[in-house]
Image 1 (cartoon, rainbow, N blue to C red):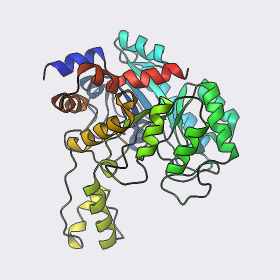
Image 2 (image 1 turned 90 degrees about the vertical axis):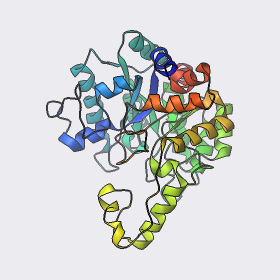
Image 3 (image 1 turned 45 degrees about the vertical axis):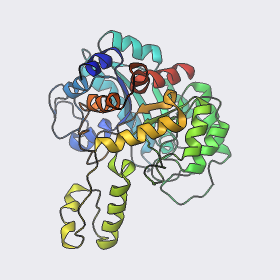
Image 4 (image 1 turned 180 degrees about the vertical axis):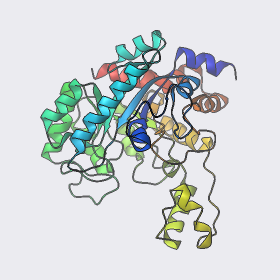
Length: 360
């Protein structure tokens, strides 16, 4: 479909979540001389040629580090990596933290490089550290990762607070004040609801899908998506198979019961499952992602959806969405389902640009 490349040239993708920093650390310890991201790097889902092929105009690089005593230091090291990455490829990348920055980068034919912290553990329970992170250009913070922090419950941990405690409310208010986006991916549904009651600014889900389509705690329930629309926020739909396919989730549950010593989410363990679990792994495809996008649109409205692929954040991606060059295929599928150019432009980046401008 000729229309999609033309549309994405005028309205390039602004993706909410890419885990290249931690993936590159695990690959080579942030050594930009070890792998040339200006060329093909098959070990990753992301390199600069594929970002160009995918019509990516803006990328939030995820700053994720383990939840331990070194989290703050390691987050600073990831900020340093993003800065060095942009300095290495000035003809392709440009640092950005505002909607104006993103638009200027795109106009100059650069990929706007934004940053988002993935987990409140990265501030070490300090509003001072939060403010420093914002001063260094970090534009969003996911309130939790897979485990609770002392002030907020995670979606994938045992609930302790039933949402936020008083300090958690202070964190949300301070993020509003300094122009850091509140990211509700990874948090419990009660934390989502609590944060939406407290916030005075639009929030985002940087990489989440719809719980009504795939029933896992990481996804957003319909009542939250309805509130998100009233909040003027954006849910950036992710491509992670375990978050988009109920059949895949059910298969993983069966595999875990049959072979608890193996992790069915890991490709190397999936190959070993046949000895104890003979149920074929269901295919996860681009159509599964389309179902989430259309559901979020149906509940929250077309002004409240975006894309947060989570490339380099999980070992496998749906058929048809293998890497960051794949975005045009997704937009072609939506166009075939009747989405017009204005709607596709909002999904590609228009909605998140609006939120960035409203929260500056």
